[in-house]
Image 1: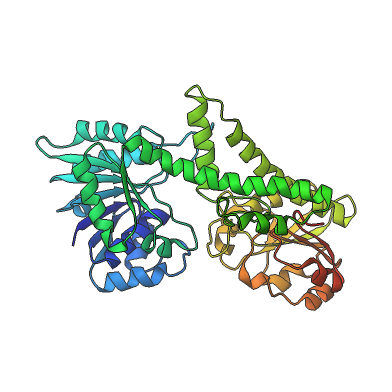
Image 2 (image 1 turned 180 degrees about the vertical axis):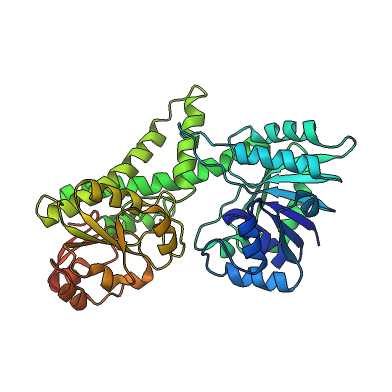
Length: 432
C-alpha cells in the first residue's frame, strides 16, 4: 500500500485518485477550489462520468480516499504526488502552464519528506526538466525528489474502465529507480509498462491524441469525397477497418472531434513543431478538416430548409462532445449552434447529461426537457451527439411534432431508407 497525493481534483485527477484508492492505496485529492472539495467530501462529483461516483463513495467509506484544500495536510507522509491540473490552450495554441507551475511551487514548498513527483498533466516536451528546476528552487535542503512523466490516456465516458484496463502505462524519467517505483503502483493492472526518457513520454501523449484526431479527420475528408461520387462512407470505413494494419476504431464519419484533449493537444503539438523549426502541414490540415465538418453540417441544414435559415427553428440533439459525459468543452454542438444563430435561426437543444453546463455557456438557446419537446414545431432536427437514447426515437411521433419533417444526422446513426420511409427529408455525412 502506498500513500499518494493527487494535486488537481478535476477529471483526470479524480479518476486517478479514486482508482488508486480502489487498488488499496491511501489517497488524498487536493484542489484549491473550496466548493469542489466540500462537494467531494459529501460524495458529490463535479462532473458526470459513468461508474465514478460509486468508486468515490466506496473508497470514502473505506477510509482510503479523502479530500482537502491544504497542501501541508495533503503531503504529510506522502510518497507520490501526482500533478493532474489543467493545461488549457493559450492564444496561439501553446499549453498554458500556469496551473502546473503554481501546483509544483506549492508542492515543493510544503513537502516535508522525500517525494516522487508524477506528471499526469499533458505538458509540452521538455516540461519534466522544467518541473525539476522549479522543485529544486523551493524544496527544503537535504530532501530527495525525482520527477516522472506519466501521461494519461483516459476516454471520457469510459475513464474508470480505461484506468483499470489500460492498453499501456508510459513512464518517462531520468531516474530509472523512481520510474520503477511508480511502475509498482500499476502492477495490479497487469498492463504493459514502458519506461523511457521524459521527452519521449511527453511526446507519446501528444502523438497518440494527434494520430486519433487524424484518423477522424481522414474519414471525414473521405466522407466529403463519397458524397460527391455517390459512395457510402460507412461501408468504406468498414471495408478499411477489416484491414488489421488500419483497424476500425476512429473511422466513424460525422461532425468532427471535440472535447478537452484532441483540440488542445493537436494545437499544442502544431505550436511546438512550428516554434522548433518544423512545418506541421498535416496537423494544420487535421484541424482545418475538423472545422469544415461543422460548417458543412450547417450547410446541409440550410440546403434542406430551402436556402435560408432566417427565422427557422432548429432542434439540436446532443450538446456534449461525445456520449456518456456532460463535457461540452470544444464540443461540435457549440460551433454548430453559433453558426445557426449567426444565420438567423432560433435554436432549441437537448442533451441527456450536459444541460447544466449548457445553461452556463449557451446564450439565446432554448433548452428542452426531452428529445420530443426539443423537436416540437421545429423546421429541422440536427443530431450532433450520438447518445443511445437518440437511436430509438419514435419517428412517427417526431413527424407529427415537427413543423417540417427534416432530419440532418451528424453522426450517421439512422438508416436512411427507414427515415425517408417515415416521411422525412434526410441528410447525413458521406452517404448518398
